[in-house]
Length: 340
Image 1 (cartoon, one colour):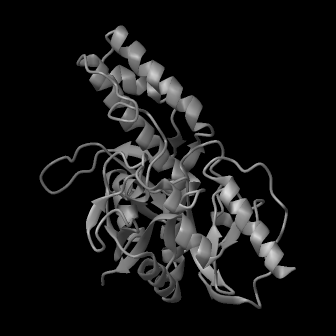
Image 2 (cartoon, rainbow, N blue to C red):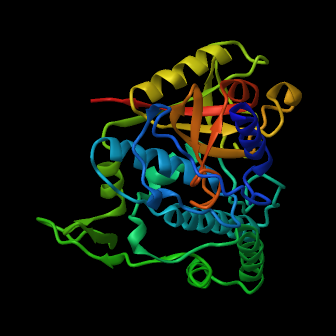
Image 3 (cartoon, rainbow, N blue to C red):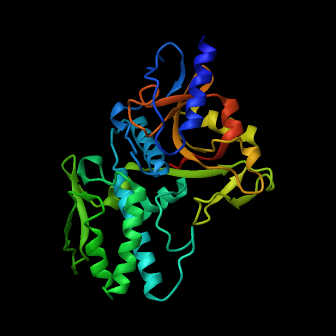
C-alpha cells in the first residue's frame, strides 16, 4: 500500500508541470517518524504561483528562505518584486528594439515572457535586490495575459512616439506595487540619487541591502548532467528558458545525485529543475526543463520537494520524489556553497 501511494505521488508530480495541476488528492504528510533529513520550513512560505510561469523564482526564493531559517532568521520574501522587475525590463527592451526599427524574434531579445531558469533569479536579485512579502500590495496573477498586454503597450508607445518615461508610467498600472518609498539620502559631501527603501524589524533597508543581509555568505553553483557534453565541462544549458545562456558544470548523474544528498545532509535546500519526460527522450534538443521546486529534505530515501502551488496541493504543498525519478528527469540543479 505504501509503495502504491508513493508511485501515485510521483505520477502526480510529473503531471503537474509548471502550470496548475488538474487537482489535488488532499493527502496530508505524516512525516514525523520517517524523516531522515528535513530542513526548517513554515507553511507561511508555501506561496501559490497562480497562473504564472514563475516557478523558478518561487523555487529560488524558497531555497533562500530555508537557508535563512537554518540560521534562525525567519523571513518571507516577495516573489512579485522579482516578477515585476523582470516584466518591466523585458517590456522596455521590446520598446527600445521597436523604436530603433529592429525586429522581434520569437524567444529572443524583445520577447516578453515570465519563463526563466534559476540563475536568472539570482541575476534579478543582484540587480534589484529583495523585499519582504509584507510590502506587497498588488500582484501578478496571470503572466500570459500580462505578457500580451505589455507587448501591445510597447508597440502602441512606439507608434504614438511616447518617451521611455511615458512607457514606464503606463506600465505601472499593470505591474505589482509595494509599500517601498523613494527618497534622497544626504551623505558627507553630496546628495545621492533617489533610492528605494523600506523598514523591516525597525531597520531601514534598500532592496540591495536586504538581499545582502538575507543571502549572507551564500554562493550558488549550477550543475547539469548531459551525456552530449564532456563530463566536467562548463556548458550553456540547452533549454529554451535559458535565454541568457547561463552556464552549468556538466557532471555524471550519479555524482550529481551524491552532491544533492550531501547538501541536504548538511542542512541546505537544493534548487531542482526537471522535465516531465525522461531526459534520454530529449537528446538532440537539450534536456527538458518543465518545472522548478525546492528540495527541502529526505523521507525514507526519497526527496521531499516544496512546490509552489499553495499549501492545499499534495502533502501540504510538498511531494515525495524517488531518486530514480530524479536521475531520469533532472534538467539541472542549484547547490549552495557557504563562503565564510
